[in-house]
Image 1: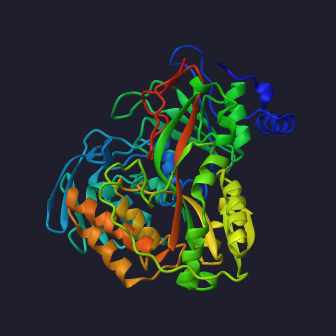
Image 2: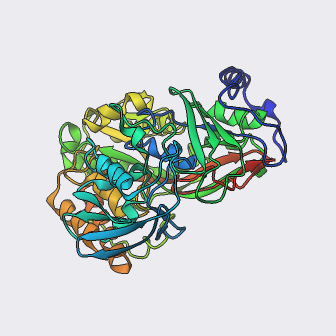
Image 3: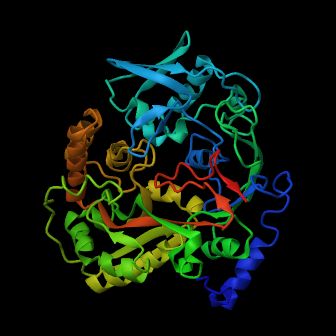
Length: 496
C-alpha cells in the first residue's frame, strides 16, 4: 500500500520541494523516453569531498556510477575475479597481472600495462595513501602484456586490495593537473562528462566499452545531503534511484520502492585515547557500560538496525561463531568530567544518535557537549583528535572485502583513519598477524582476534550495525543493491 505523501510534515515537505525544484534539469543530454531510453536520475547522499578524485572516498561514487574500473573485482563472497586484468599469479612478494586486451579509456587511448602502472604508482605515492594501502609498501612495473605488483612483504591480499575503487585505472589525462581529474578518463560503461562542483554530475553511455553495452543512455546525479529531500525525490518522481533513505522517511514510502539490506557498516563511538578524559581507560569503560544500544536501535532506527556484538556485524556471518570473550578494564567514576562528542549531519540518524548518547552519558555522570557539522567540515578535526569522542558510521569491508584493512586503518598506530589516536602494541601485533595470514579460516580467526584486541582497549564502542535502505522508482530495472557500496547503476540498469 502506498502511504500518502501528505503524511510528510508540511514544513519538511515544503523544504524538500524547494531543494528539489529543477533537481535534475539540465545536468545531462536528453533522449527519447521509452524502454531502455531514459537517463537514470540518482539522488546521492554525500557530495564529492575531493573533486571526485579516485584517491579519496569519492572513488566509490565513480565505482557506483560504473565509470571507473579496477584490475580486479570482488564476487558476492568477497573473492577476487577478473576485471581489467584477466588473470594473476603470485611468486613470493610479486603478483603478476595480465592486462585485458581491447580496452580503451573514455578519451580513446588504449589501456596498456604502462597505463596501469601509472595509476597504481600515483596511488602508492599519494599523501595520504588510499586506506587500502595502509601499512603496505607497493610498487608496480610493466613487463610485456603484464603488470608486476611487488610488496615489501609477501601479501596474500594483493588481488583484493587492487579491487578497491581507490585503485581505479584512469587515462593519462587524469593526472596532468595538480589534482586527479576523472572526467573522460575511465574505462567503464558510462563516461563522466560533466561535474558541477558539489551539486551535480552527468555521465553518458560509452559505446566503445569493452564489455556489455550499457542499457541506459546516461546518468544524471544530484547530490542531496538532506535525507528528507532525497525521500521526497523518490516520492515525487524527481529521482529514479535514491541512495540512503533515512529510517525516519522509510515508513512514508511505498514498501515496494525500498530495499533493506544488512550492511558491513557499524555505528561506532570512537574515544580519544591520546588526550582528554578518555586517556583514562576506566572512563572509556564507563562509557561502554553507560551506552544502551538497544534503545538507540529502537528509538532512532525504528528497529531497522542490529545491536552490535562487536565491530564486525551480521553482514559477515562467520564472525559470531569465532568471537572470543573480551576482557575489559573496570569502569571508573565520571565525576562530572566534561567531554565533547562530534558527529556529522550527512547521515540523518547520527545527530539523533548523538542526542541519545548525550542523555545516556549525562545520566552516567559525564557533562556532554555536542559538535555536529557536515562531514566535509568535520573530518579533518576528527582525524586530528580534536574531540573526546566521535560518532562514525563506518563501512568495515569497504575497501578490500576483507575487514583486516578496515581494522588496520582505524586502530593501528600508523593507521590513516585512527580517530581514536590509538597506539597499543598488542593491537598492532594482532593487526599485523591478521594482515599477514593467508585467506581462509585461519585468516578469519586472526581477524576476530584482532577485533578482540581492539575491543579490549575500549578505544571504540560499537553500538549498532546499519542496514542500507535504497529507494528505486517503479520503472527502475536492474539497480544494484550492494552491501559494499561499490555498485549502484550498472550496464544492466535502465528505466522503463
